[in-house]
Structures are given as C-alpha cells and as structure tokens.
Image (tube, rainbow, N blue to C red; front, side, top):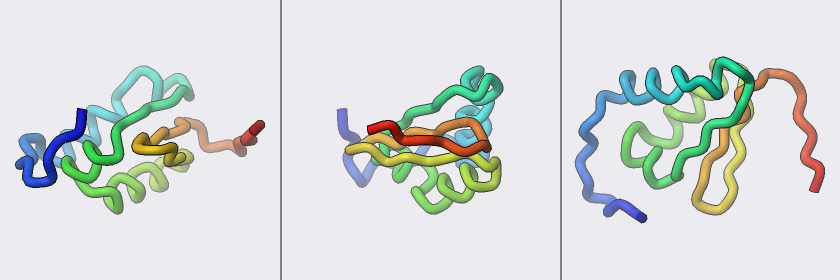
Length: 79
C-alpha cells in the first residue's frame, strides 16, 4: 500500500533509524527490507543511504523496495 506524499512523518528520524538497525536480522548479518516510499517519507533516501553506508552495509534497490544486506564483506549477485 502506498502512502500519499503529503503524509506527515510521525516518528523521529533518529528513533526510526534506531528501530530499523536494532532488528535481529542486523545483528545476525541478515537483511532488512523497506518500501522506498516509506523511507522517503520517514527520513529521506539520502539520510537512509548515509546510515547504511556508515555501518558498512550494502543497499540494493529492487523495484519499490530497498534491501539492506547487513554484512560488510563482499557480496556476489548470482543472477
């Protein structure tokens, strides 16, 4: 479900990022997925990209989804 662009953010951006990166998947080297529109509405894509990069993780955009690979080592795209 898409949110209208005029939706007002209700979560503090720092709190929002803290919640995302506190997920169990982050600690275990898994993946975190969020809607691109949701990220843009909550904190902005640039701020999210900086937060992912600061942690040494990888960010993939696939369609309308953003996928964070919570691993700082090399990745290989198989196909």
